[in-house]
Length: 70
Image 1: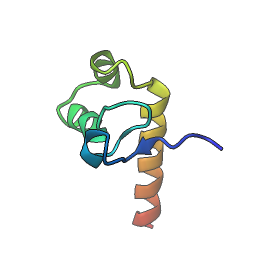
Image 2: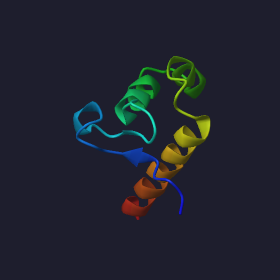
Image 3: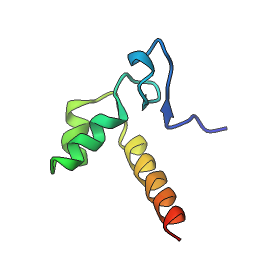
Image 4: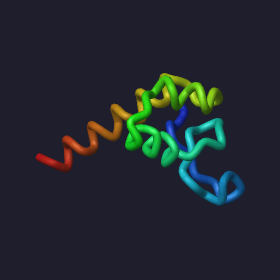
């Protein structure tokens, strides 16, 4: 089974959703993108997050949004 993209645990960042295997909150990626930064700039600032994690997260978010819009 594939490892989950996002994890939440009370002992990691107080339960804030983070990219699995890191202490980087998902909200940080969203804040970067909202500010007009690129995925590359985000990854430069948070090298523990893999590009594949970011792409998979965005694909999942897109799929959920499209599914709820129909």
